[in-house]
Image 1 (cartoon, rainbow, N blue to C red):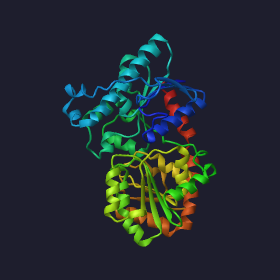
Image 2: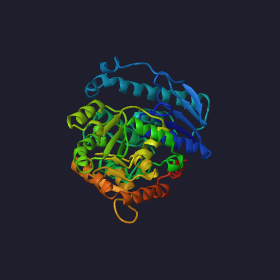
Image 3: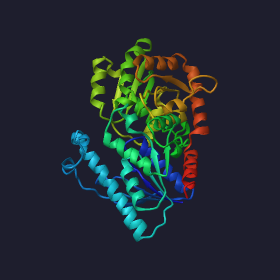
Image 4: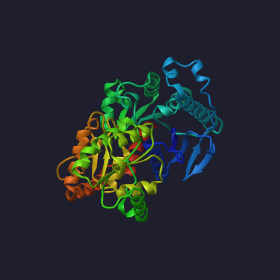
Length: 411
């Protein structure tokens, strides 16, 4: 197949799990013999056309239209304040990408595409415009949705974009059965909805692939000697439960004084988390590192950890949990409400690989971490079970095959 793939984040410019997914799935498509053309956002410093790992990448150069948008957009968008620049950049990326795809690649160059794949509202404009201007089959991938991200609130404009993209698309793929049920309850077309779990490269995320010298350097950096390490990797935002994780630490330190929490990620809550840690008197018990690191260093962080905690309040899927499980680490995950993490992690029995908690409750998070630390030798078995579960159910190969099967059904 020849696949047109629209995703706002892609190599080398990444923001979160969506970018990681996009890179891995497109590389796997190419490895399986398909042709992939990616359209993605240009931060102004990247080439507008590039070939990478057999993938053709287009990054149209955009202009800042943030001063123009408030002149005609809805009041809902005016309330975004300075964030209107983000919306205007996303719109420009979508419009220019869709225009280049339709006018140049399809109409001028006469290139025959089989599928248009677009991801979240951030590429929703492009999907809608392409569907309106071509006869090509389109698939809308919903990795998250506004009602879920904001727990019922959020931008009405973004919600309208998501619903129109769902109406236009021939098929919808979402990332967990929890999200599928949520979308159905919101009125999304049930006959279009399909579930394909995200997957990871289990050879890459393996204890056999660890730079142990880098692990030693991380121990020096975080001043770790004999402490048990609790690790959080993810966006520093309230919905990931990281605030409640820090609030849980006084209880944990009381019972296990020889622990340290390492938080790795970027996000709007960084300053608030620093203040919270200081107000709770946690000092060096909590290390917050707000920067992007290489994949090699991410892997080293998992190897450093004794338990990985992802106490999301709402999480459609959660790739970091798979990465930790593949690295044979027991995990504590938020499992209330919309939770793909609940579908990943088995919390009891012979195949147990972690603990389910309520990410809204610091006391419950503390309880979950204590379960691991109090049963540390047993928890090592949970880590091994986790890797086995990822290998059997959550590989990027499986994700690619199931996604391609849905694409093929439209051809």
